[in-house]
Structures are given as structure tokens and as C-alpha cells.
Length: 354
Length: 179
Image (tube, rainbow over all chains, first blue to last red; front, side):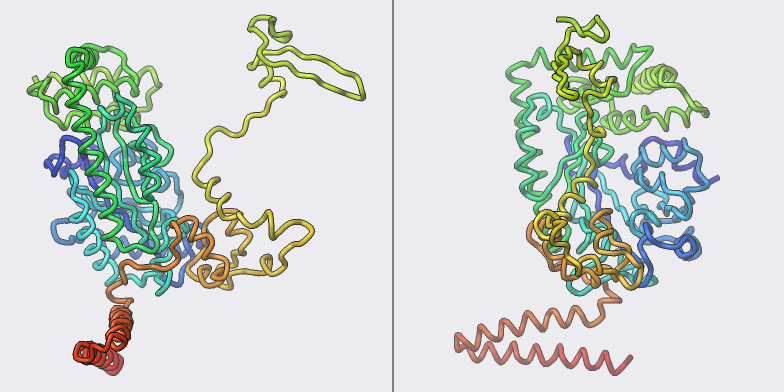
């Protein structure tokens, strides 16, 4: 089964490239919500309508290519095991909401995993495009081009005054959610991030944890995204987001330098202790693993730890999630078994680096 | 003082129960209070959905009070998918694109709250479906420019803009003819 290809690697091919500001920004993402005109949205649609949409996407786009996004794989959610679903969620290829939907939910994923289209999620169509590092404009342009390509065959629900019509009023207008995944250990350590959040919220942006709405900032990874989708052009929404992200980058860099200057030995201690825990643990919980991985990654960025690749954070954060561990073990695991396997995988992965 | 239920943990809560004029004092710890049902905790976590539903129902307190039910509001229903305005406010989701027209009169306050004051789309217009909408929007911009130029008596400039408008209007009619 071709699904294998998405399941075997913890990090997507595009993540191996280093984007701008890659020491702090892990990835940029644009998501566009679209619906078919003349058809009720998934929450109220008849099963038959949703099946028609699913079939349409399978027939029109399976194994098709758009520019560098080649050979789209068509995946029916109902054909997946629980473990396979969690792996796709952990890799951010589909949303937790899509994974929970029964029936005609599906996804199209490009070979390089940079573009995915969720079908029959909260909206009929949700396009996602990823780029490494901070590249919002590029990501937006690609997403809009891809959107035009889909629109060649799909009659979108669009209204002159309200824009793209979506099931949830929070997405209407552009239907766009732009988000940037950032590693902010120094701002978290100095608790500055908590003080900055209200200001960020006032600008119509929102800060969340790594797995979206309501999730914790595991491994000091924060997701910053726009809240407002109506009344502003896509480019302007992105400009606002980008300027806040730039400021966060600047503050994070300053905080890193300050900690290094004022408490260098404590910081070094913290980083190496974490490195030690990861290298020698026999049992490790996901929260502890995330915390240590964040510290090690900071150590790499500051040149304190050498010869370990930066990707270790992104890769191990995903690889040590419950779905991935169970996929690796090829069976369901108890929490204890997961903690043991997690520790062993991390040890192995770090040995490869040495 | 120890908890009178479990006799282990210290009592951190003191209740006075009055039943038929009979007064009972209860000294209890938080754990037992929860178990015995003295305290009720709301469902853990407050989802974005609850928050939104709260936002949408903003007017229910003043306008739709039981003494003065808004009949009109109850009757608003989307002819296409059957969703009523009340249902929309409860679930916080539209049923179909037509709902936006059906509930149009009630939507502006909601959009203003959710999108910091905005009610009109200013972003992308779909390439194919948008058709002449791009041109129409451009014409509208030129027309307001033209007004300003005339007021300022910049007639040479005004003539240029007027020609641009004519060009675009011709394009629209051409596109209409070719279809």
C-alpha cells in the first residue's frame, strides 16, 4: 500500500531543507477553507452528497500533479487503522477532526507531503501548504495557485460581499488560516512569552501549542496564526503575522544571548543534563522527552552541542508521539510500553548522530 | 479539623445546610465534597466552540427575553438546508452557503465580533467564478478616484481615469457577448 510512504518517515521530505530563520521557525503553513456551491456543508450534508464529493476528488486528482507537487495520493479515512490515523495527525498531514470523521472523509497528499487537501472535514475542501522556515509569502502564493487549479473544476461557494463561504463564521472571507511554528525556549524559560501573548492576541493573532487548538506548547513549540479572516486581504493578514513573528524571533534571539551571558553555566548544565537523559533513559514520558529535546535543540542552535542535526527536534517530537510509536511496534501499546519504546528509539536515534 | 467523611484529609470546606429549618454544619475536604456532590464542577476545559456560541447569543439577554420573545427570529430559516437562526446560534456553524443570505440581517454583529469590526470580504476573488467581478471592483475604485479628481478640478487626470473606466466596461460587455 502506498500509504506506507507517509508512515515510515517521521519528518516529511520538505522538512529536510532549511528555510529562512530555521534556528527559530520550524515551518510556515497556509490553510484555505473552500466549499462547493449548491451543496450543504459537511455537518448537514446527506451522506450521498459527501460520497459524490469524495468520488470526484478520487477520480479527478488521484496520482495527478501540480508543479512540484507530484503524484497525489488519495487516502480514504475509513480505510485507515486507528494507528495510521494518528500517524497522519502527528505529521500534521490531516487534522484531528478529519481523523475522527466517519464516512466520506478523505485526503489528497502530494508525494513530498508539502500539500495536502482534506476532503469533507468541517468544510468540503481544506487545502494546506507547508514550507520550511519563515516563508509566508511564498507559501501563500503557492496555496493560491493551487487553489486556482482546484477551482478550474470546482464551483466554489463564494459571495461578493462575504467572500468564501465556510461552515464556521470564524473562517468566512478569505477562508485562510496562516500559521508559523516556532521554537521559543528562551522566551518560555524567562516566561516572557506569557507576557507577550495578550499583546499578540490584540493584533488579531493567536498563539497555540504544537497540535493546534487547546494543545500544550510541548517542547516549547508555539504556533502563531491569524484569527481574523474577513475584511482583510490575504497579503495583509500575512504581513501582520510576519511582522509579529519577526519580533518574536528578535526577542527570542535577545533572550538567548542574555541567558547565555548571565547564566551560561546554568544553561549549559540544563542542556547537557537533558542530553544525558535522552542518551541514557530506559523509560521516558512524552512531556519529559519534549522538554529535553527542546533543550538539546537549543544547545545545537547555540553551538553548545555539536555534531547533532537540528532536525532531531522535529523528527523526534513526531517519532515519539503515541501513534508513531505504535506504528513502529506494529501493535497497540500501553502507556508504560510506549515510555520504554520512546526511550529506546531516542537512544538509537542519538547514536546514529555520534 | 479533619474531614468528617474520610477522617483523613483536613476539612477545607465548611457547609451550612438548612433543611426545613433544621440547620446542619458540615466540615469536609475538597475530595469528599466532590464525591458527595456538595460541589459541582463544570466540564473540564472551555472549548472555542462554547466561547463562540456564547458570542453569537449576545442578544438573547436583552432582546429575546421570555416576556418579549422575538417571533421574527424564530421564523428565520434557511430555505435550502432547513437550518434555523436559533439552531445556527446554538451550534455556531452554518449549514450551507445559502444560510449566509437567509440570516443576512443578523450576521453583521456576529462578524464584527469575530473579525474585529469587519463585515465585508476584501481578499481573493476566485479566478473563474469571480468572472467580471475583478473588473467591477476595479471600476468602482476608478469611479471614486474620478469623483475626487473632478472635485479637485484635475480634469486632465480625470479624463485618463474616465477612459480607463470605459475600457473596463467594454471588456465586461465583450466577455458577456462571447458567452
